[in-house]
Length: 318
Image (cartoon, rainbow, N blue to C red; front, top):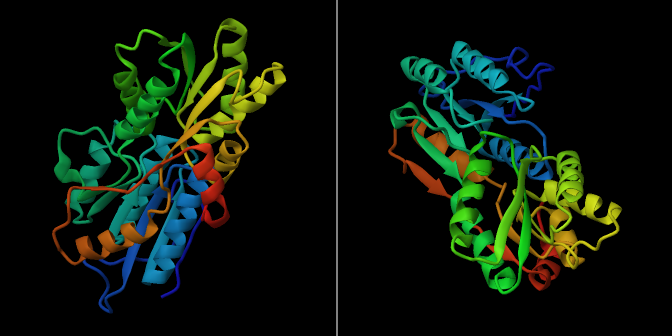
């Protein structure tokens, strides 16, 4: 079955078309998935969307796709639209952690299973979703912090932290993991911390302001590559050398970030794999069939130094 991909101008699901099943697949065994994406704020997100679309087509799953453009209310509207369409399964990557119980309860009452992908929700009732597929963001922050301790801990290090979207799971967890890892290390201080909203433009803007107010900054911890790339622009505009005068740790390992690492402008990257499509479709088929699935599915990821980035780049898929 071909994939039906609908991009709404308002990203509220209003342009999605087609009718799904009743929560158990169509009579011919076909599956319709309603998927609400956060947006297109970064290279990581673009690769994630492409993986989901390609994998749905390969699996023969009809995909009703909605872009939330970074707004929670758009996602809630899209999910309600999916419920009205009686899709067989709903999957989404939550813009923020909180505020989902009501709409997820609506899906549960309609008998439509929900899969969380990339980001989780903060809810006391985990029966509202079948499974969560994604990275361990706390572990990513911890890996970044451990590298910082090993490489920055012997000298005074003043860190600018570029946070992701306020209230988003990766922003909260990557901050937590990093803070836990550097705790008790006297030489490493986070002297400025602000959201760059996971965008390159946001990273540049925040970094410019931080350098003006905290000229002692000599290190950056960016919650994603796009913000790190924006920070590089701000650092260079300030007449400093990224990777040397101001060292940088980032998270994601998308191609542009990996190239900056290979070029020595970023010093260390923690991978966050966006290619979740195949695993998502497998989980969707299982939950629609009524099979048991793990409540938490963690993706496998690694870290990269400059030398490893140079080696990995020729075969990098995103």
